[in-house]
Image (cartoon, rainbow, N blue to C red; front, side, top):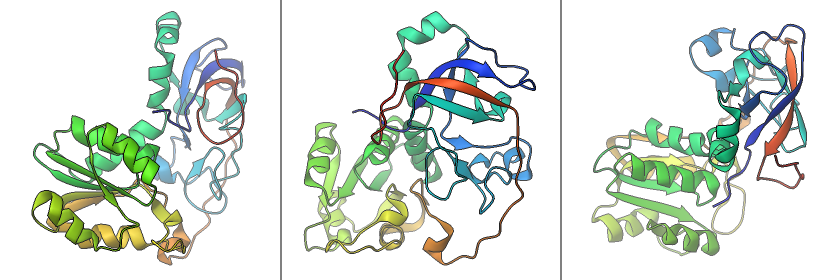
Length: 273
């Protein structure tokens, strides 16, 4: 399975105020952009940083409505707040030998893992994961590591479901005209699960192909047992749930330029180390 969004590479330039990162360092670049200084960052909510996006909290590279930070799928990436945002690999030679594994630290794998942890997945859990794409499969793999007894992945795409089956996960074909609780009942004996993970977000569509931004989240609430939990790593823009947006303050910060080494999603080519 090839994961996307990963940015890992070598620092080739740095700003005058960057203190702890040096040219030549091999680093991992998180997909989220954060300042490390605002209240949300200090409370470890770096996904909704208040200083990196003039239109809404939160910023990311190469993603719509998240601050205009381009370059996440390019040969070179300008990284703001470099001392906070970059993870330096202490042994460059050793890191290069495992670079394909280390690139998984930046986005998709941690996103899926965070969804599983947020949903309270643990030993013996039954888990329903909406979406069999890279994030969904990462969430399924994370659920397995966390000790889940039964992991069920749902999707409209039959090829993705076939891929999920290869890893040993149960699957639900959402294109079938059958209620999801009924399909869950056939697998686990009850029409509900201990935990659900939304790995689709606002780009969700119904079985007929029509856009239904909240359909996955609503389904997750329907099939999660009382006392269970839902993890939502899928993107949920403010308009999805009808909430107004409040523009945060803006900021300019010390930056570095990174030659991106590994990045496996979208269409822009990158130079591998």
